[in-house]
Image (cartoon, rainbow, N blue to C red; front, side, top):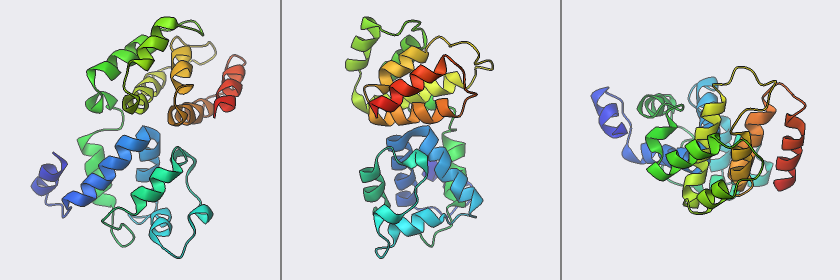
Length: 210
């Protein structure tokens, strides 16, 4: 779909470039992808961090990665070595195409029916422990967990008043405790909120899960 869109708009993007970005989106989720595109915009299409990752003379451990990318360091290392190399490539058109094809808020566009159902159930959870939702999580493929967390966070972003604990937050915590990537994504989001008394124990719980 993206290749056809690029062709219609006269963008000179090859299929491998598009696929490499789609792999990043799918494996690291919305927040990490948003950060990638933010860096592309900020650094005029040539993010330094990508050049460092592709440079064999730079040690991986010495590279300053965005917090959102630390969900899976092994993946980042392997992904950076996939062709094509991005060091000398202006990624502005590719980032624009990705945003146009699958807007970052439209997580349902890449979620299965089972994942969408899990988002709905977790958003209804009002209590800390739910046997029904625990079972629903374990019966959902782990590959779907990250997109489910993205869906939960997108719902939370619609909340304007965080003085009271919202319905669904315990559902998100339940999922976060089953997957490290989900845990870090939820932590990143919650830490961006105004600090509330009810939030402190949840942050401590999640930080102890990592």
